[in-house]
Amino acid sequence: MSQVLVVTSGKGGVGKTTSTAAIGAALAMNGNKVAVVDFDVGLRNLDLVMGAERRVVYDLINVVQGEAKLQQALIRDKRLDTLFLLPASQTRDKDALTSEGVARVMDELREHFDWIVCDSPAGIERGAMLAMRHADVAVVVTNPEVSSVRDSDRIIGMLDAKTAKAERGEYMEKHLLLTRYDAARAERGQMLKVDDVLEILSIPLLGIIPESEAVLNASNVGCPVTLVDGDSAPAKAYIDAARRLEGEEIPMVVPMERRGLMSKLFGRRAA
Amino acid sequence: MANKAQQTRAAIRFRGRSFLATVLAPELPLDEWLAELDKLAGRSQGYFASRPVILDVTGLAITKRDFTDLIETLFKREIKVMGVEGADPSWLGFGMPPSVSGGKQTEILHKPSAEPPKQQGFVERTIPSLLIEQPVRSGQSIIFPQGDVTVLGSVASGAEIIAGNSVHIYGTLRGRAIAGSTGNAAARIFCQKFEAELIAIDGLYQTADEIDPSFRGRAVQAWLANDKMNMAALA
Ligand SMILES: Nc1ncnc2c1ncn2[C@@H]1O[C@H](COP(=O)(O)OP(=O)(O)OP(=O)(O)O)[C@@H](O)[C@H]1O
Ligand SMILES: [Mg+2]
Image 1 (cartoon, rainbow over the protein chains, first blue to last red):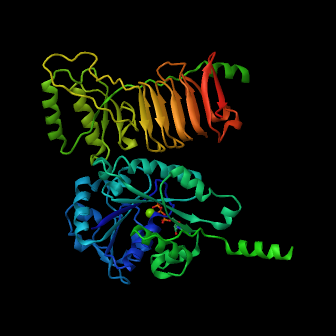
Image 2: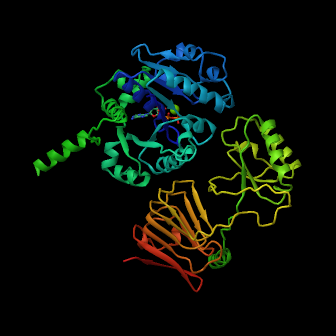
């Protein structure tokens, strides 16, 4: 049974594209056949994060418009042969994404893949609606700050109302992915607490991804963080999140500041 | 100066009055959809004549040009669009209907009839209370002029409940609660945890800044007495 997963947020720049690549790669490493699909027409990024920008020939719009076959547009990852990218168009008008066309492409993707991970554009306009439209499960990417939380809340409302699944009267499965979590700032009380975010959004927690240079390094070399630096803290958190999506039960780790912890321990000892 | 301003402010009341609107959601191709619409309108003359209509174009792959043409064709059919949902904001310039969102689904029964429709074409609901079992999310509004609204979850920042009678919230109220919207001063607002942005009863409203901060985070009720908002913690 194939699963269509949408990675969405409402607010921009919270880590959707990073998370799509990292989770897509982690699912593929677990032996799944995975397609990551970029819905961010005009502002495509996923090709860069996946390191495939120089291999793009056809894109999602070409396939939606019937100008190219799906197999021609899919780009196989150089490192993992079960991972594929369906890029967005950087030049075409986003109105070229028709809703029937997208439905047809999603159906076709379902025939070939175990997981189809859709990277949503920011906002609540057409592009974001089309990205979530055919999803079976949603990952809501949220940063621990008020505006991101409120936008996520808005998106959750739309997942429950405007998706094909919701319109059929079925329950839309939603998971919260808390990203760019800064342990040092959390300790100083400069960020919303994990519990507060969970209380406000009241959907289950899929993972907490720490703010980390490993993410920037990974995107600079054009490789999902889970593939390039599997031992880094964000990669581990993403790998756990992917396994939870597959139904495994894995205890949640709240990132902690090592230095802060050490100085506290030593501080006590010295006293 | 400050006093005067406050006086003027106190005189303003905003009464939530909700109206049922027929929502038209066109499908592509538009000419086929219009033909279908004409068939429906033909079966009962003047069906749309005195009806408020909201045009929902969410997810519809049309251009600004198609959109303006559509509004015009509808106007020619005596369908006057009072609001648009899901349109690109840049389409809704001068002379265009305003954008609306967050409507609540209601059945409007359409019985085709040869006779001209009576003014009261909508089905009157007699349900006195509405129960919402999910959290109310930011951007959603629950409008229930017929009576009480009870919410089992929380009402998010940027969400609103508008009830003709009382509002009961068993989670946290972070958004707006508007009770007695149809002019009922006896309506009350109850919530398990008060973090509201705004509350109003019978058009008399208070913003978060005007509310005693000691109520924050507590279970409270609010009611009107002598045209003044009163609040008290629930034991
Ligand atoms: N855990 C993290 N640690 C450090 N930087 C991060 C982390 N997650 C994301 N970033 C950085 O934040 C920026 C935005 O991330 P990303 O492009 O994934 O967000 P997005 O939600 O897809 O944005 P948009 O809404 O513009 O599509 C990028 O520069 C990315 O490298
Ligand atoms: Mg992105």
